[in-house]
Length: 632
Image 1: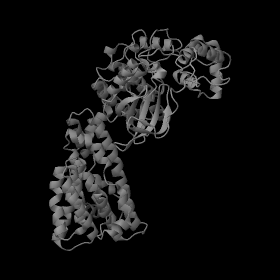
Image 2 (image 1 turned 60 degrees about the vertical axis):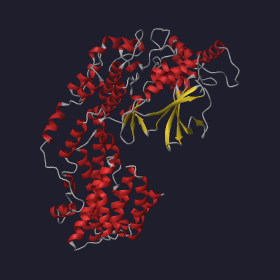
Image 3 (image 1 turned 135 degrees about the horizontal axis):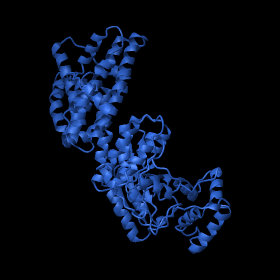
Image 4 (image 1 turned 90 degrees about the vertical axis):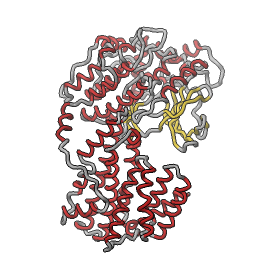
């Protein structure tokens, strides 16, 4: 089958010499018969740097030689490439304050390295923009790139890859960015199929990232699946804000096949996702252009094909300017209300699209079926804070002989009513990222509580079904799990009274919940030396201590350190005075952490040493190890 004109991926593979041999043969055959594609390649080759010898070669000589090779056999001898302006940086090279670790990838306009930031003790992604290869070697060009990159650094949002720092390295500009373990949305889509609701959920995160950028005056300019990352943690992030404008706005790029020759670049964007105003001769980009690209990508995610037909840029431009959106594929399963929302965002005239990205978000979030479901859920069970000690008794009373029913423990802790109350509190803060924060919290707590149910059931079955452990060991494991669930209950109760600061901290607070694995470590649990007491005063003291620890941990997670100190300090001293060394150690250790967070460093130091010696006396090895570590 004859090859169509070179698309962007094929073009870049050609320049970097990464085309597979079978594909290369087709490209070779096509270049013999297509003047526009040969012109495109020739324009790209013009920006090649001097030869390896360092001897400058006249542009015409380089171009004629390489085009002659292309005309006869593009794969005879060395493949035509755009070489890096400099060799890859060696490990340990200092770029600003950052130390190069390894190269992660090479793109048409940049090189990305993993690097180490010694000041903040963290790994970052370091993107070096190849200014020289772009024809931006002049000081004015670097100044423009630097100004655009600094604008990108103003965008701070959970669904945007963070830009930490911007600077120059020789004649290049670097961006220090969040290092994300992720793959592109394109790969996520290829790994599908995904239900339409899941696709919308992912794109809602993208839309909120774009809205945050627009709020500080930053336009992406090239919204497409390749610029959207889906992390291993499930979080969706938008990357390369403004880079399309940085990379293309000040250079004369290759003339794409089928497009009219024009003396300057299209102002960023990939043709399949470009709004009408981004095509020549208008070439302007604003927030509504991002909306168009977003809806084009969403259309593709929902229907598995792009919204406009066209084998060349010219044909695509004609379809886009005419507003000829493809008809709905058969059996897509996508509801009509959603198609209307997407097609509105693909309107030819910017003013006919959604008023803003926030308006588009509201339209996508207005699923009629979901609204009906939410109304049915508001059946309103009374809210209940479960105490750490009382939970085991309640569950055992409900289920005397079997191990079923652990999921009932979520009533009042993380059920539909509590989730609705938390969501309402978050949204009520009117913070732009409140919806995203709640989604992260919901995902994290859903995972944690599901693991809790599984672990509790397994602990019960190990004694009463498989007979692998004693009732005493099961009781220790249950007490540990009760404490973990009490932490969840206290945290979600706090979330129902969220303020803007708490909304910001909420995702990290959920991630900071104590891992459940400790409740399966029988050796560690038995070494704590817990013993029951018939003394009512001792039992009351234990309940008060555990409840105070639960409350204080939730306050610590919320950043309310002073309140946490006031909550836990009296019970810590009470437990120590009563000789409950193990319990007092837990309380003192938490008290030290709270004082440290509140800025009382001297008090924290004294308290952590007190916690360490108290833990040693109470054989609380876990608290002792953590206390000595914190003291160091």
